[in-house]
Length: 157
Image 1: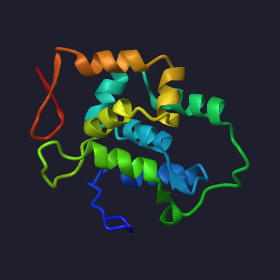
Image 2: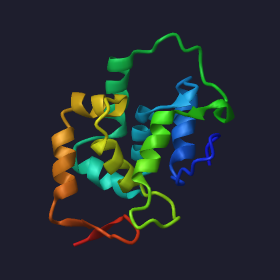
Image 3: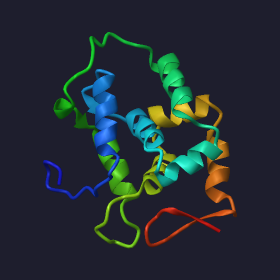
Protein backbone atom coordinates (compact mmCIF):
# COMPACT_ATOMS: atom_id res chain seq x y z
CA UNK A 1 0.00 0.00 0.00
CA UNK A 2 1.07 3.56 -0.60
CA UNK A 3 0.46 6.51 1.71
CA UNK A 4 -2.65 7.30 -0.32
CA UNK A 5 -3.97 3.79 0.20
CA UNK A 6 -3.70 2.51 -3.37
CA UNK A 7 -2.33 -0.99 -3.84
CA UNK A 8 1.10 -1.42 -5.44
CA UNK A 9 2.00 -4.98 -6.40
CA UNK A 10 5.11 -6.50 -4.87
CA UNK A 11 8.26 -6.62 -7.02
CA UNK A 12 11.00 -8.77 -5.43
CA UNK A 13 13.75 -6.60 -6.95
CA UNK A 14 12.78 -3.43 -5.06
CA UNK A 15 15.22 -4.01 -2.16
CA UNK A 16 18.02 -4.32 -4.72
CA UNK A 17 16.89 -1.12 -6.48
CA UNK A 18 16.76 0.72 -3.14
CA UNK A 19 20.27 -0.48 -2.25
CA UNK A 20 21.60 0.66 -5.64
CA UNK A 21 19.98 4.08 -5.18
CA UNK A 22 21.36 4.35 -1.64
CA UNK A 23 24.88 3.44 -2.79
CA UNK A 24 24.62 6.16 -5.45
CA UNK A 25 23.60 8.72 -2.83
CA UNK A 26 20.09 9.07 -4.23
CA UNK A 27 17.16 9.59 -1.91
CA UNK A 28 14.69 7.99 -4.29
CA UNK A 29 14.53 4.95 -6.55
CA UNK A 30 14.37 6.04 -10.18
CA UNK A 31 13.97 4.07 -13.38
CA UNK A 32 17.76 3.87 -13.74
CA UNK A 33 17.96 2.04 -10.40
CA UNK A 34 15.21 -0.34 -11.52
CA UNK A 35 17.14 -1.11 -14.72
CA UNK A 36 20.35 -1.75 -12.76
CA UNK A 37 18.43 -3.94 -10.29
CA UNK A 38 16.97 -5.97 -13.17
CA UNK A 39 20.51 -6.58 -14.43
CA UNK A 40 21.90 -7.40 -10.98
CA UNK A 41 19.25 -10.08 -10.37
CA UNK A 42 21.14 -12.56 -12.58
CA UNK A 43 18.70 -15.43 -11.98
CA UNK A 44 15.77 -13.32 -13.16
CA UNK A 45 13.89 -13.77 -16.42
CA UNK A 46 14.45 -10.21 -17.72
CA UNK A 47 18.22 -10.71 -17.75
CA UNK A 48 17.91 -13.13 -20.69
CA UNK A 49 16.11 -10.46 -22.70
CA UNK A 50 18.56 -7.72 -21.68
CA UNK A 51 21.52 -9.99 -22.46
CA UNK A 52 20.06 -10.73 -25.89
CA UNK A 53 19.76 -6.96 -26.35
CA UNK A 54 23.46 -6.58 -25.59
CA UNK A 55 22.88 -4.81 -22.29
CA UNK A 56 24.95 -5.49 -19.19
CA UNK A 57 25.35 -3.77 -15.83
CA UNK A 58 28.76 -2.28 -16.67
CA UNK A 59 27.53 -0.69 -19.89
CA UNK A 60 24.47 0.77 -18.16
CA UNK A 61 26.58 2.12 -15.28
CA UNK A 62 29.02 3.74 -17.74
CA UNK A 63 26.17 5.25 -19.77
CA UNK A 64 24.57 6.52 -16.56
CA UNK A 65 27.83 8.22 -15.59
CA UNK A 66 28.07 9.82 -19.03
CA UNK A 67 24.44 10.98 -19.11
CA UNK A 68 23.80 11.96 -15.50
CA UNK A 69 27.35 12.67 -14.32
CA UNK A 70 28.34 12.40 -10.71
CA UNK A 71 26.52 15.51 -9.50
CA UNK A 72 27.22 16.75 -6.01
CA UNK A 73 26.39 13.56 -4.13
CA UNK A 74 28.46 13.26 -0.97
CA UNK A 75 28.16 9.52 -0.56
CA UNK A 76 25.79 6.71 0.21
CA UNK A 77 22.60 7.29 2.13
CA UNK A 78 20.99 4.77 4.48
CA UNK A 79 18.85 2.36 2.49
CA UNK A 80 15.91 2.80 4.86
CA UNK A 81 15.82 6.52 3.93
CA UNK A 82 15.46 5.80 0.20
CA UNK A 83 11.92 6.24 -1.04
CA UNK A 84 10.42 4.92 -4.25
CA UNK A 85 9.56 7.59 -6.79
CA UNK A 86 5.96 7.96 -7.92
CA UNK A 87 7.17 7.13 -11.43
CA UNK A 88 8.58 3.77 -10.34
CA UNK A 89 5.46 3.02 -8.28
CA UNK A 90 3.39 3.67 -11.42
CA UNK A 91 5.60 1.30 -13.43
CA UNK A 92 5.25 -1.48 -10.86
CA UNK A 93 1.50 -0.88 -10.76
CA UNK A 94 1.35 -0.95 -14.60
CA UNK A 95 3.36 -4.19 -14.66
CA UNK A 96 0.90 -5.75 -12.21
CA UNK A 97 -0.41 -9.24 -12.62
CA UNK A 98 -2.20 -9.53 -15.97
CA UNK A 99 -4.48 -12.20 -14.55
CA UNK A 100 -5.50 -9.95 -11.68
CA UNK A 101 -3.73 -12.26 -9.24
CA UNK A 102 -2.00 -11.08 -6.12
CA UNK A 103 1.39 -12.69 -6.70
CA UNK A 104 4.56 -10.71 -7.17
CA UNK A 105 5.37 -8.85 -10.38
CA UNK A 106 8.06 -10.66 -12.36
CA UNK A 107 11.15 -8.89 -13.63
CA UNK A 108 10.03 -9.54 -17.20
CA UNK A 109 6.66 -7.91 -16.53
CA UNK A 110 8.42 -4.87 -15.07
CA UNK A 111 10.83 -4.69 -18.02
CA UNK A 112 7.87 -4.79 -20.42
CA UNK A 113 6.17 -1.96 -18.48
CA UNK A 114 9.38 0.08 -18.54
CA UNK A 115 9.71 -0.36 -22.30
CA UNK A 116 6.02 0.32 -22.95
CA UNK A 117 6.01 3.52 -20.91
CA UNK A 118 5.56 6.49 -23.24
CA UNK A 119 6.94 8.99 -20.75
CA UNK A 120 10.65 9.79 -21.06
CA UNK A 121 12.74 8.08 -18.39
CA UNK A 122 16.40 7.85 -17.56
CA UNK A 123 16.30 4.06 -18.04
CA UNK A 124 14.94 4.42 -21.59
CA UNK A 125 17.50 7.15 -22.30
CA UNK A 126 20.29 4.81 -21.15
CA UNK A 127 19.00 1.93 -23.28
CA UNK A 128 18.67 4.26 -26.24
CA UNK A 129 22.20 5.63 -25.77
CA UNK A 130 23.45 2.03 -25.84
CA UNK A 131 21.50 1.40 -29.06
CA UNK A 132 19.68 -1.41 -27.31
CA UNK A 133 15.98 -0.55 -27.54
CA UNK A 134 15.41 -2.28 -30.88
CA UNK A 135 17.53 -5.28 -29.93
CA UNK A 136 15.59 -5.70 -26.69
CA UNK A 137 12.29 -5.38 -28.56
CA UNK A 138 13.43 -8.11 -30.99
CA UNK A 139 14.50 -10.29 -28.07
CA UNK A 140 11.06 -9.88 -26.50
CA UNK A 141 9.43 -10.92 -29.76
CA UNK A 142 11.88 -13.73 -30.49
CA UNK A 143 10.01 -16.87 -31.49
CA UNK A 144 12.48 -19.10 -29.63
CA UNK A 145 11.49 -17.62 -26.29
CA UNK A 146 7.98 -17.64 -24.99
CA UNK A 147 6.52 -16.32 -21.78
CA UNK A 148 4.75 -18.63 -19.36
CA UNK A 149 1.45 -16.82 -18.83
CA UNK A 150 1.01 -18.19 -15.33
CA UNK A 151 4.31 -17.02 -13.85
CA UNK A 152 5.41 -14.35 -16.33
CA UNK A 153 8.78 -16.12 -16.60
CA UNK A 154 10.72 -17.26 -19.60
CA UNK A 155 10.59 -20.91 -20.55
CA UNK A 156 12.27 -22.85 -23.34
CA UNK A 157 10.22 -23.10 -26.52
